[in-house]
Image 1 (tube, helix red, strand yellow):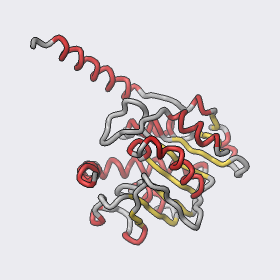
Image 2 (cartoon, rainbow, N blue to C red; image 1 turned 180 degrees about the vertical axis):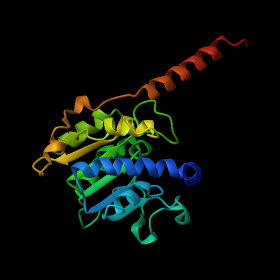
Image 3 (cartoon, helix red, strand yellow; image 1 turned 90 degrees about the horizontal axis):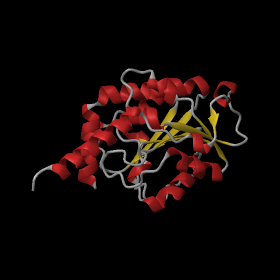
Image 4 (tube, rainbow, N blue to C red; image 1 turned 45 degrees about the horizontal axis):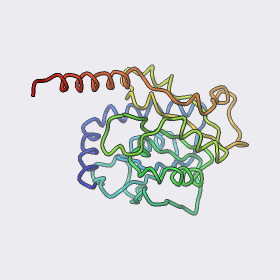
Length: 232
């Protein structure tokens, strides 16, 4: 797994400028509605989102496996912690925002409920993005629709908000899986900015697949058909 994710993060490093730009835009959109002073990111990778949060004055903590080369990280070493997220993750303190961006699809399916528990234990506000069924990627073993995750959060008393996806779609370098998957969860009873309140949705409205996702599936199907027709 170390080698597998090492190669994946090498690709992230090669796309660093674009990935940082996406993180900056996501943070910019989020800060319109909510301004966390402390942020923890489970599965932070090279730290692009945390760097964007730190630029806005937030105290940051990043958690990921030991496959990330510290020399490649865009956040300071003291802000990083190593952990296997397939195991429960706990801290004595809480944060104003817990984030996890395109991570849960890499975890064992049986870890899903516990991972949501960990996020809720860390914060009353959670930024969450995870791959949907048939989304391509490295070790995608736990692909679920957004609404499935939204139901898990709802069972723990967290409402779903959708303030980022449509605004991010207007960014010409937007990564399509972020446009598709990024949602915000807020614990019921937590004060919410009126502008954010307008973006509350029910869990079944969270599930969404972009044209990018459909096109990938069509190309995949056409390839399978060609292979079936090829002479043997």
